[in-house]
Length: 193
Image 1 (cartoon, rainbow, N blue to C red):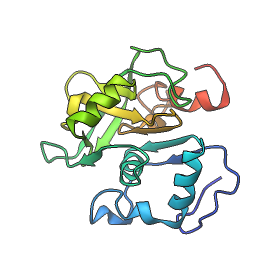
Image 2: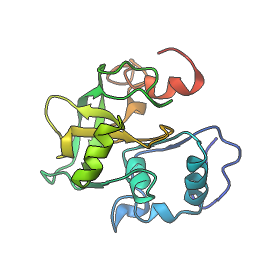
Image 3: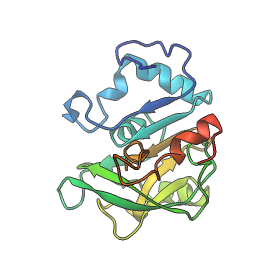
Image 4: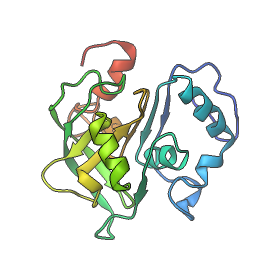
């Protein structure tokens, strides 16, 4: 089922994926205006009650702007858009979104962003690391200047995950870089990767 940004109803969905792309032209800050969409009020409340929510790329930015996840995503440190196959290491599997992976598993999924640099203050970064809330890190070089090579994080409960790379673009071997992204979605339905 698709949710419409202007409709505050979640229509009994079992999970929400905030996709990548652009929202409201990203004129202020990426995700800053989308955070005020009528549907986001319902998503925020449902996420706090345990609804699984995955934010991919711009969706990750919206989750940070909504304060469902800490930190922010800013312009890439080299000021250029990145579009490449990206190696990641899965750090935490304590989420339905990452439960199909093994801690330390290396995967490759596409990365496509101009504002993908994850930043937070040192206290927040230490807290994310110390509580196992970093779900993925960039390998083979940091493509956007993210602090501590962080590619994705989760909330304390584990039901909300933000990820800058695009796992949805790595679910079919025929049309993508492989199927390494499938694990992010199969954990919700209990199907082994």
